[in-house]
Image (cartoon, rainbow, N blue to C red):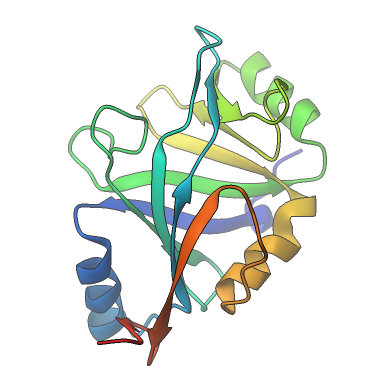
Length: 175
């Protein structure tokens, strides 16, 4: 069962990730450890088509909830729903398959999920509410990795091509 206390993030899709990191820092005091530049292996639920869109993201150090910023990638699912920059509300779940099936049974269909070795959804799944709001379910076992990204300790991964260290919590360390 998904409960309010399991919500861990609010995600916004932005046009310019570096500018958004700076704005969220200056306007609201959020700090970020790194900008991840990578890829996000994905399977569309309706068509079963796989894709590997580019991914640029930053996750705030502050939690409850965390702010996740994704740089928009036209012609992929990494775009804001019409009329807003809000991309999704993220919830940790103990059993991704069961929680995903439960949401689908409630009329909140699975639209895409992570894919590993041909299996999907793995690690994460997006479901779409009637108003277009996306709900991300993340396997609670992924929480340690999220914590590592939050503090800037990014382990080697096939989807993380580059890690840009941020000085002062908002600007690239080399600027």
